[in-house]
Length: 90
Image 1 (tube, rainbow, N blue to C red):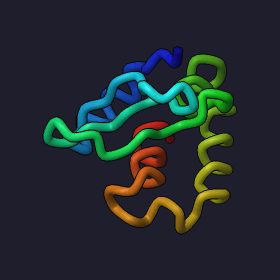
Image 2 (image 1 turned 90 degrees about the horizontal axis):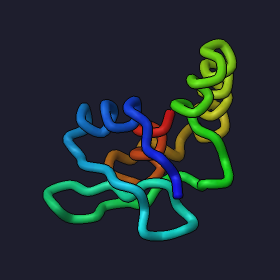
Image 3 (image 1 turned 45 degrees about the horizontal axis):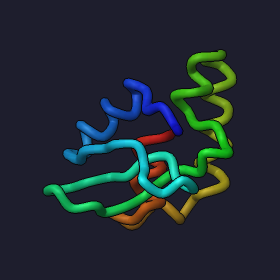
């Protein structure tokens, strides 16, 4: 099971959503808004910004930059799973 780190909780708070570990074993986090699940985000097989930060800030920033290049355009729609993944995990 994925352990949600403080960075993700802070980002979720900024978006006015609540997060908890996903019930879906193929996802990291379930995102809730107004007590309703709005998205399941993150593949547990891959690292994310908070996990990279624990190792090396320079590496974390480079991985974040590359993530945003790969997913440019995917995360533009506010409220989509890609949007929440971008804002909470990266």
